[in-house]
Image (cartoon, rainbow over all chains, first blue to last red):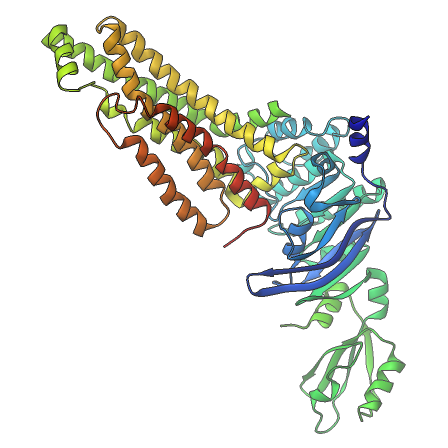
Length: 312
Length: 223
């Protein structure tokens, strides 16, 4: 009876959100990375975590994959606290470590055989070998002798063969040339959409993210700046330019909600905003600025990211 | 799953294990050959007398070999796990983390015991024709702490390598050096006879230290 209950408990809980993080705080020694971070990832969505270096992306991935105890707060995956998850639940989580790390001393056949034993009834050998056929490597070639691109395909192939409910990918584009990045993104997107899988990922190459993700979280130092579907973010966020008024002081635009990182560039005022034009004009008027020729421009995810987080 | 873990360990260490077995057996054979030659030249009675009266066992140069074999095995087995934090992959497998660590250590221990046992049996068989049973026992018992040191070196090596921070790693190296020194305090044959059960217990306890390092790795400890 107890054994049966144990078995039932180790099934993924069918919660609406596959990942749920509440009031997450972390510090390395005295350095605070972030405080009271809360976010969730709904089932079947692809969420990209964007942020500059040092904002805590890898910290978040490490906490989610159970390799870092947060200073405060807790994270659940498939309904289980990541720190106290039954080990059998890990079969539902595919993990890609930064740099597509895999066992260097194995070849593509050995590594497939190795992992297959851990995922009975769910291992999809064909999915792995389908991807491997695209690589021009001998079956006996060791992973240590492969290029970074080839290694990334091996790592992706293994995750696809594992067929997990959640994929956690840390900086998946690191070290990949455009061809391999595209191959990785296309394969992953197709798989996630077809199988209704949930993906949580980070990358430094935002153009790739735009092709792949449904939702994004943009992190600034110590906090979440934006969390919303990419489509909404891109429809709301615009880049604005106008000639700067005489004796204009940038401090005039300090602490304006919805207006990010105003800059003066050769007499032109530039900023990014997530509020409609009318509201911007109203805010500027309240600060004593009469601007007539405010031009707005649609931007892509990378521009939105830089506009919201600043260049430096 | 256990079979897969063993396969992984074998793939990492197979060439080294073959090399270590050859070196250990070859060196033991060389020492035995020297002993046989000494008996041929000086006569069995003289050699037995020297062994009894001057506390000579003719295999003293073997003493650090098991230690080196154990240390290098730990390096060959656990360094690839720490390379670019590959251990994350191992610990992410849907298998108990403690059992995974234990299986890895057990593999190494069995491999070492097998390697040392071959050398031990070779010496035993080789001495059978030239030494009386009492002297064979005397030589083999004297070498036992060295082989135990090899096993302890392997376990302590695993503890050090799996530790995620350099600060602690250095402290562990110093502590390990002190612990291993215990196995080499006396050169006198059979000096450890009374102490051997305690040395064996100390060695067994060293096995639990690796779990401490793995636990710190899971907690995300870093420099």
